Amino acid sequence: MSTSNSLLKQGPTVQAKYSENNGIALVWNMAETMEAEAVYHSVSPEFTESSSTLLDIQIDPAGAIFTRTVSPGRNYYHVKFTNGSVSTINDRMIYTDGVINFRDMGGYLTEDGRTTRWGMLLRSADLHELSEPDLQTAAALGIDWICDLRSDFEVASRPSPAIGHAINTNVPFMAEASPEEMQKIGHDLHAGYKAMILNTEKCALILNELLKEERDTSLFHCAAGKDRTGVVCALILLTLGVPREVVIEDYELTNLAVDGLMQRFLSGNNKDYQKYMDQMPEPQGAIPEMMKAAFIQAALEAIDENYGSFEQYLTEGLGISAEQRTALQNKYLV
Image 1 (tube, one colour):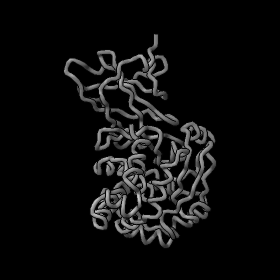
Image 2: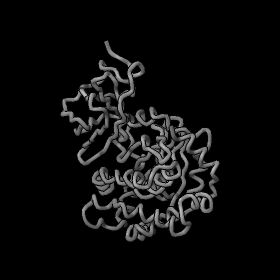
Image 3: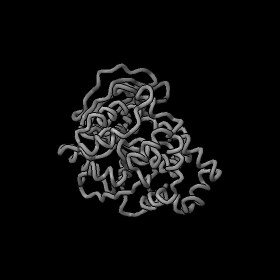
Image 4: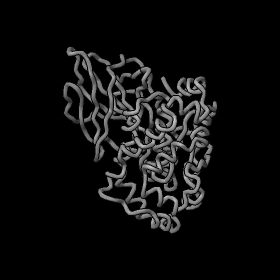
């Protein structure tokens, strides 16, 4: 007889770490008298043995390392322990055929001991190539607001499809973002990242949008889901109280998608988009080196240099009060 997760004792906290080639490591700490006896994969957050797949993997005392099961939409791993408890882990990577670098910012611990809510803050590359099955997958995520950070030029070249009931808002995060302007930024990403985080008008707009009652699940994206999206998502996570080192780790997850992103860009069949990419700077060095922590650190340094602290940046730079920050935290943390 299958057992519902709601009837099971919650197991130890399990953290997921990602690596190249769809690698994932599940890590846990627990009492010496208890062991993990099995790891299951499913497409449901509720664990039932009958609808879950038992993984044939080696389980060590402190964790397990294996290749992720890639299937459309949300995926979950359930670790069953010898005392009968089960820990469920959301796979933050969301798989679709048409969109690379699609992931969830849930599950991050904050400095006050809370956790970012799963399924409320999503990020991705552009949505232009979502297939019909992909659209069904995306609609099932219950997205209320899509924040498109691309320029008018990019939106016209690769328009986004409608997804469920989501409202799609274009918030061009770099005012110009013409191919020429993008090329300048491409040659000096440190300066570009600093300029983006100091774009206080757009940063304030985004945080205020997240405060709206109708904004429960939001998706942020640009062209690749790495630079503009990386800065905006860092802003959001820092506002929620996620430590800087964890924010940098989230940013660097894009490294796992960079090969696919570059292949997608360089083989684009949309003539306008290809023309746009032809004017971009050539990648320097190995592709995985493109997403360096130093880039997002440059944005964080710009905050410190101009405002002294992130708290001052929020209040003086963005006009976000302590009450508004608390409201954001209460909404997006658990």
